Amino acid sequence: MKGVTMIGVSRAQNADAALTFVELTWHKQRIENRLRFGRQVGQQVLDRQRRVVSVAPGSIFAFVRWAANDYGTIISRIDIVRAVAAGERYQTLPFVRPGGEILLRMDGWPKVERVLQLIDAVEALGIDPADAAPDYWQHVHNRLSVNETPRAYTRTRHQAWLKRREVSP
Image (cartoon, rainbow, N blue to C red; front, side, top):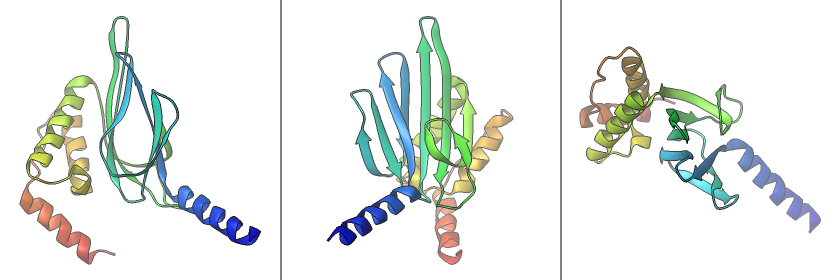
């Protein structure tokens, strides 16, 4: 009986090792770390203001960080990240363990706001942003980084991504 329990624990530990964990925090008018989109496969509530969510390998999520002090906003940031599988290379990111493939990284409220508008535009097409082509988020990052306007995500582009995903291993 002990062997069965130990095997069960081992399997649970192995499953957890494959997940990406994101710590979310909310302190009214001070700190807000949240997911804008992404599919959570688990959640652990730490206290009233903090929780840790888990994301499956290969999933794409948007992590928004905002903080303020008595004088105003001190950080506005958004990262769109692909959760990596065990053994894959990754980039580290605060509050994300172990890290992930960063598809987009924007700092400063004007650029963060623009990314949020583009996410809204993808949702307006009836497409979950977590299902959008990863290269679209890289395109948005590249264009906004040089103060250019990114191309809009379209249903045609999304269909092409879905077909490409079907034939790629």
